[in-house]
Image 1: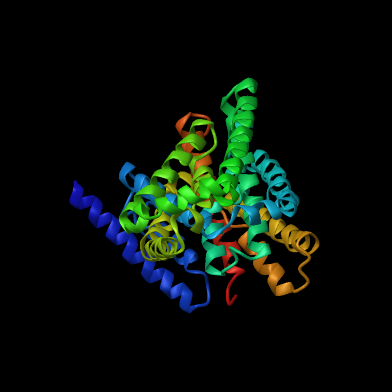
Image 2: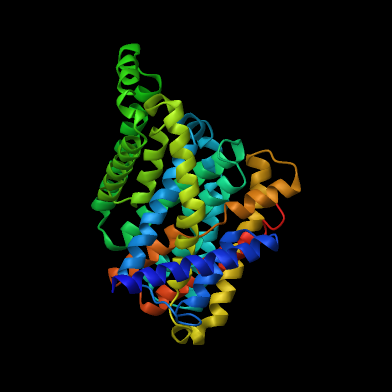
Length: 386
């Protein structure tokens, strides 16, 4: 059994990296190749590998390190500084595409009110997973445009999980979830202030403690524990753990563990992500699409909703990115609108929760996953040659 899982992981990794490299040579983002690799070897086409609990666990682990590195690469003050334009970008990147997706889902599929909402959420919500990879790929993590995009995506992903909660929780629980998350943010901001700009006495103690942190392995252990703790807290209050992991990454900075160790950890995490976790995560995402037989009668409808949502959102974000971020260059506006339309783990997570609690059927789940992948492939294709 253990050998079977190892073989599956190595097949996913090898095929994803080969097809990803082919797409890189064709001037497409490698992520497109990873997703297509998963579709090819998964139940949708060849059915060489089917999704199982071991692969889902590995996918969650990969996402942990992908999002953690994004948080580490950014600074809290940048995120706060560009929060206002980020809020403005929520409308074209999520709210309006969600309204269109709901209208199309109820017309084309008619799964039911709650099921149509969950499918529409999965399709319309930008995902911090793929967007974070693209932002780091194009070195926008410290650029105003990249930080604005991330600020917007954090808001949209949080809103999406709150809306998801409303489909199976009562009104009071939904309100409590919002209150808990607000308290979580306030605590986080204050902890970060103490670590970053705290009193001199505290900073002196922290500096002395770096003697302990000279061990690279000890440093890795500390930051992983921080990531786990904040991620668990985020999950407990009803917001997906990946939002908490991002905030945990923001806490990790040079002042906490020292410049030398910080540089080593950042470089090691980047190598781990580029060489293993990113191709594995997106390869598994492609494998999660069910057999073609389940959706063969509604393929045209899936194509319609996917193309309608992505092109509507691309046009909106192309226009709004110029207004909100004051971008005049058309090529840059195209890049920004393509990046912010990345779909991935968040949409898949929402659909998975909907399926697990019995709100959506296997067919509705397959619609959500396949449409999410189609939209991601189209969006990232607009980055060709960037």
